Length: 337
Ligand SMILES: Nc1ncnc2c1ncn2[C@@H]1O[C@H](COP(=O)(O)OP(=O)(O)OP(=O)(O)O)[C@@H](O)[C@H]1O
Ligand code: SF4
Ligand SMILES: [Mg+2]
Image 1: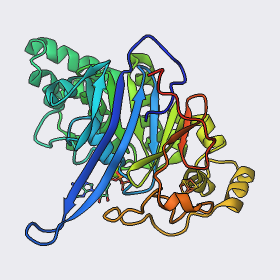
Image 2 (image 1 turned 135 degrees about the vertical axis):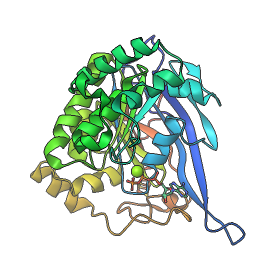
Image 3 (image 1 turned 90 degrees about the vertical axis):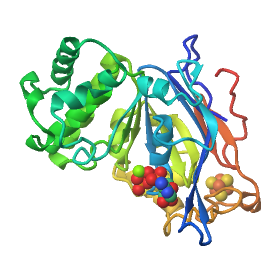
């Protein structure tokens, strides 16, 4: 069930994903295959001009979710709507409206293509404009991301990591997508340029009214950029809500545990959280996830029901919800969606 809508509006959601699931088969074909439940029933939605941060430990399914949202991976089940229209199997339609900025600008840009070719490729694929119009558009996009149009004849290796990521952003914006998915867009960059690229993304997103999904390990970056935050644990959503609510008074024990170890929370509050919960060990193996609430093996307040019954998203106020049996028992209202 998607989290409740904090700001009901007549406008359709820019992006609405419902009950997405993805399982991977692992192990060599012919031998005993095991299945990894990478994403298991994730729903999310966001409006034009809104940013949603996605956080969670390594392997919790953030990239798999991102890849489904942008059409690089087909969900086993669930559906995606863009501006109120179902996408179904129409990957071409999806790529027109949803674009991705990848983690590593060193491997995501084809080294044999010039910057002009890289940025204009999506326009060529979708047969938009004449060659001259596409060239003008590339110049405009380069200016937009803070690079000089004179650089369009150069190749990716002639740029720094930060500049390459700006090229990746220009390419992603070429089709004027409604939704931009950024999967760890600055984690491969020097710390000294990370803030510039994050601020560029935030400015562009606000100026162009794009719906932004921003995945990051670094909680301080998510706090800085995201209007709303979704916390994932082992393929499921643990909590979603306004970033200030989720960071200042986390409702789900897992979010509390994540934040108790993060410098993004002020030391007094962090000590209070750490008194209550310490996140011990690694997440369980996703080939054999725990029954019931997937967090029950690490949760300090688990009750018997947690091992047998999967918790639904329960509203803890406004557009804020947590998947925990012990969260405030008020069914999340999906009637506003
Ligand atoms: N193509 C694949 N084949 C098999 N298993 C996969 C594949 N892609 C992802 N997985 C598995 O799915 C689970 C989720 O992976 P995913 O990359 O989505 O996590 P993540 O949250 O992005 O992690 P990280 O923070 O390390 O980037 C992991 O257990 C991973 O090993
Ligand atoms: S449902 Fe149970 S195990 Fe899961 S987070 Fe809540 S209390 Fe902990
Ligand atoms: Mg990832």
